[in-house]
Image (cartoon, rainbow over all chains, first blue to last red):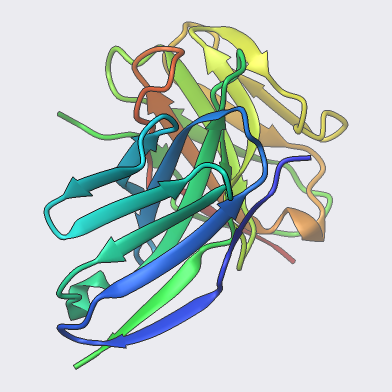
Length: 112
Length: 114
């Protein structure tokens, strides 16, 4: 079955770069997503990448995709305390249903 | 533009009781999803609607869970009877079409079953 795996915890200092990693198993996945969840809030889409791309940059966020290794990463430049949250990697398969398959989330803690 | 609305935000019930959650998607969004998020895990799909038809309910425990979207807009998710393991946050999401459109999530309903 499908499985998305992430490291559970990352701690960085304010101003440093954060890199959150994710591996997925379904090679037919067409889109891969990064969502952010703050305490008590719903999921906020940060960015997504189509499977035929290697990289996508959006302001402080850089997504790298290694399709051969099924590895996805999210880099946050100049990490701020407001970036502290849980980050979820998710994949969407190329099937009739378009539901997302999520990892367990990586808790990012930013200290000042 | 208003986001996805859900109610109630919190619900505490005893096991074997019934509970219902309501979701109002973003206006014009044809696709609606219900996800279950157990503490410490990522959301898991329960059911997906396209307008008022079911696209995928393969992971919905149909012996106790039911969902409907009668007019293709609002949706309700019901649990009857609830079990302790149903304690979770129930997230509703909507998207414009049926392809890989952005899914917008509501704030969720936190259910505690005692």
